Image 1 (cartoon, rainbow, N blue to C red):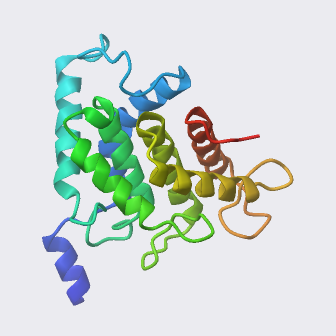
Image 2 (image 1 turned 90 degrees about the vertical axis):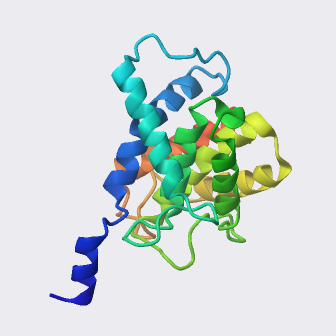
Length: 213
């Protein structure tokens, strides 16, 4: 057994599954409010009527778990294939936003997510981590754009606007002739899920006032 395998048995790896599982319910809540065209914070009841106490406890526990995994620079995780991933950071930030928006109890965590994502925006608008590039990096970019759209819709922070506008333009420029998006530069690599991710990002940007044809 290698040293890497031995270490992985001692410490749970920060995986894509654990991160996405923790944010799934909160992300759906946020998406429901975006689709209605309302800010995340506006009109939120104390506890939605369909959420039973056990569900609420699971949501609160998931948010606390996410907050405990955020590191000093605003990203998430220190090891594993999806550690330091901009998509994981954006999805976690989206989960925090669904809990009373930018003025809720996770406002500091949201600001740290913003700082992390804006700090990884490249000159061409691509939001991607320099050191840890996973397959299909446009997923992470799409989730980051989606999150920043919701943030700008509440804060109108000019720093966020510049990053969001450039990120949106990059998505628009990468749409292929059939109306979809690809995992890579290979024109045969287009896929429904990556296309859906970019459409959600564009919808979020448009809701925040960024021009989307």
